[in-house]
Length: 407
Image 1 (cartoon, one colour):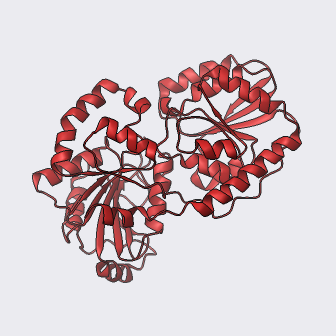
Image 2 (tube, rainbow, N blue to C red; image 1 turned 90 degrees about the horizontal axis):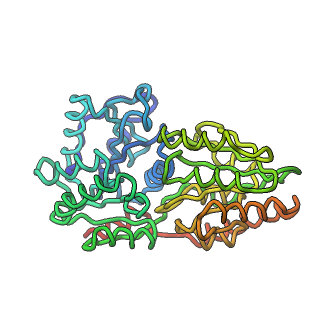
Image 3 (cartoon, rainbow, N blue to C red; image 1 turned 30 degrees about the vertical axis):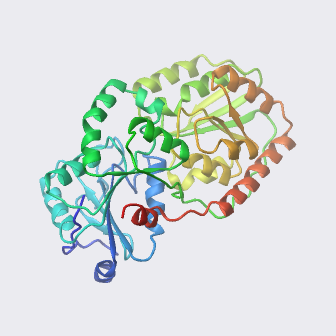
């Protein structure tokens, strides 16, 4: 959205409103960002953690208002005390929690957004209603922005486009000319995603920046593996893109004892029913358990309890969950559809090509045959390689990069 407003924000318990207002108003470069879901929600996965990192590490001279839904993904209930409110996280970052069906929220948001010029409109999704409404508002002159940056967050990966392909490609054929007329710039989180964006939108001007992950400087001390079956974990949204079906078929095809725990929100009920059908026919040497949703605060501790993270994803524009696994000293067994293939292979894990159930089964059987000492060494290697990667991964903050790129 675009010409950022500064009206008197509503009181939020415990927040120093006057100090926040004066500091924010003194800031220079104004950004309005949109995202379908944000904290305290967690079902949206990696993009939530990206946005949290962006807001919590703002460079001097940049302030942000994030506009997001007032509830978690697929939740019928709004966050207590947040609906329709502007919450200041600190002096330069604020979040507006919007109920899209409440007209008074839109009126309040519009006043806020139009109170001062907006330098950058930062849209986190190509398909989201937040992005569509924002683009239409700019195109119609209701809002004005100095520049627009669109982060599709993996939505233009071939596997993602194949899901409801006809509808998406039709929409893009109509939408892309408008984006071009508005001189929309694009953000990719990796060179792989840059190629995917250019394949779908050949005229795109793409900024590559993947430094959006709030992970520790140093890895957690790896937990010692225990005697017994290989312990595998899956952490992610239960949807076709994360490819849990292949993970289940892979463990079903092994010949050695395996324990496999699944964490994550069910995003696609039909797909989950298919997964449950595979679980019900598991061989006796494989135990599979669904452990429910996993709050972000528990992710690192959870990864640390397992021998490996099984993740045959169909595509990741970044892959926060991979970084989190390595930060916990948990090697990753993954498809070759992420920016981290080289790191995964170096860090005690495996990149499986082709990403078929049989190929994954063969890798898992080899891992399950290792003695406990070898599993422990793989976990220590994952932690060491994570530490090295973290030291070397120092990119410019995405909004500072955008300020330069979108001039």
